[in-house]
Amino acid sequence: MINSVKFSYPLVCRKVSFVTRPPSASRFRCTAKFRYRQPDQGVTVTIEGEGCRIDFDEPQRAITKGQWAVLYDGEECLGGGEIDEITPLKPLPDYFNN
Image (cartoon, rainbow, N blue to C red):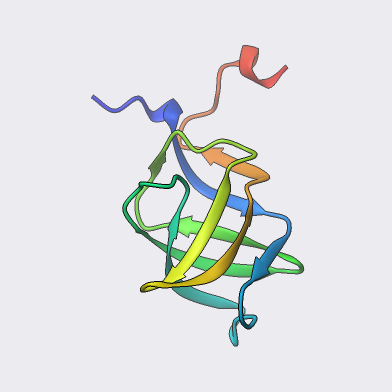
């Protein structure tokens, strides 16, 4: 049984930095990691001003504000940013929102 409160889809980084070059398109596919040893996760990135929205191919478990989303194209690190917003699959109980 999946505890849907612990799963998120999607997230927002208000400021994202790119290592070598900014993307040529405002929307692109790549992979991302949210934890050091996590396998690459397929994502669609939409650039929004200085930040981006990251939509997962599949909901991700236990992502929290303050973690970093790091974007990859194969072995190449494209860049990343601090996670500012998450959207749980199921709304959090009120005692988490106060």
